[in-house]
Image 1 (tube, helix red, strand yellow):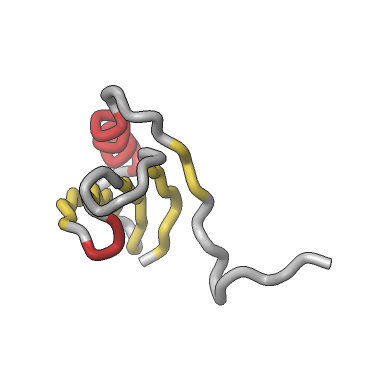
Image 2: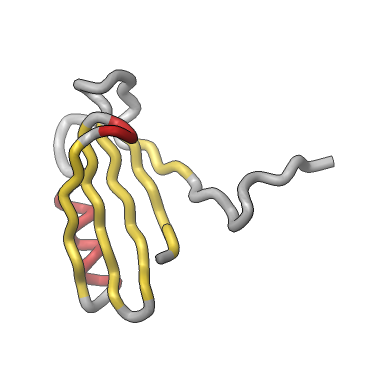
Length: 82
């Protein structure tokens, strides 16, 4: 499974943090909505097309939070730039 995009609501702490991830696995698109950081509770959505998955992401990002898009890590982790 490859992570394509990641959004964070900009809040720290187990009670306030929320994340939304867009991932692809073959021809299936997956959206994860997570509350509470890395050890939080997740809800998953599976879609047949990227358009359907993006509609779900838009709905999840709607509201009063100030969402920030974070870049996914490249395969193998971060490499220092010289």
